[in-house]
Length: 119
Image (cartoon, rainbow, N blue to C red; front, side):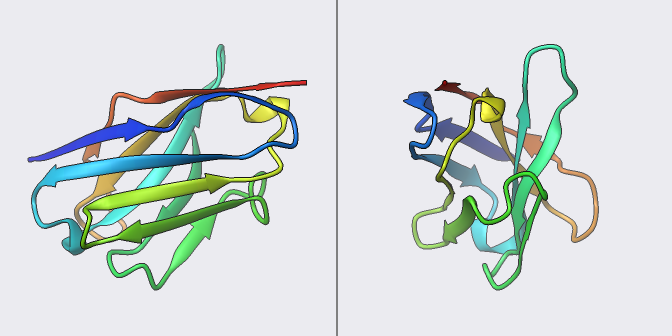
């Protein structure tokens, strides 16, 4: 079992920054990959970014590449999403998720944190 709790969401003006955090507990954090996803009202959930268990590999959606940075601190059991140059279209509920098997499904999800970007 893995428990995930996101924090750091809020209201920000376009062009601003936010840093989301996701604290994990349960299984050994350094043994699995982590991802961030988001879901805007009326839209499907979409992939935002992912990071390998070691932090050595990262992946990004084209829509956030160059603006968002995913990182992790295995000593703190926490994954982060630094979001810069935010746009109104980044408004969504952001979820972190744990991928226990490399290349497999995301097995555990947090409850989500709201990010609202005003124009």
